[in-house]
Image (cartoon, rainbow, N blue to C red; front, side, top):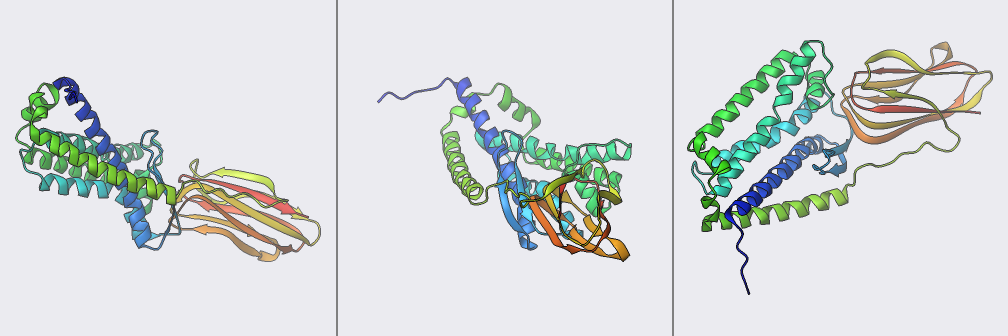
Length: 330
């Protein structure tokens, strides 16, 4: 059998691409795993897991409420767990390793420390009066009530400390640059092959685990309103916060069977409250959540109501999520 020998430059390019794939996949797994782990330990239920990093759509779906410090910890765990695993890896491998491990050091450092950049930029944008995209950073600020400048400062400290650790665990910046730019000979040594096969085995095992989890917990459960309900209002929680906002109003001229169905999609909020108010101070909570995160959920209230004017009132913090209200009256 003829053995195929790849040119050194092509071999190096393939190794770089493979190592990058390994790093991006493991970062995605650890990021979503950090959110899920805290939720599971705090009593939430895992509904769905999506590890699709190619389309940047990876996410985890949890059901249940977390408030206070637990909610704050869950938010930061997405960035914190990859950072902790990366630091452990950097401390575990020798300062001078084979080419594949050296490459893994550099690529993982670039990936993990780059995840801290939004934690510096978004709080500064928020402090300047801008409205950056809602993500873990802004959710953390809303949950923790920390000053944006404090969050940006702590992220900057972690960023600088991370690069300091990287520099202490390599033999020099020139050596790392040379490995990336021109040093192909090191990728042909026997040790590199063994390390590469070990990485392939780890990736295959973790990939199989990821596929099993996504199959066991498919993302995107669907909820539909019961028959007889009509669309009354749709609210995008990302647009603005609300306090006592009337989203639906209706009047019953005589006692009648009435119902409210609420469909929630992509919600990740520290506080949301949806209440039905009626005549004589009558009040019924339809939906209430603190540290409420889910991809899809539904809530239903139906009973015979007295004649009078009714209002569905929303109070919420600005956050991701859509709330759709359906109404049924006889």
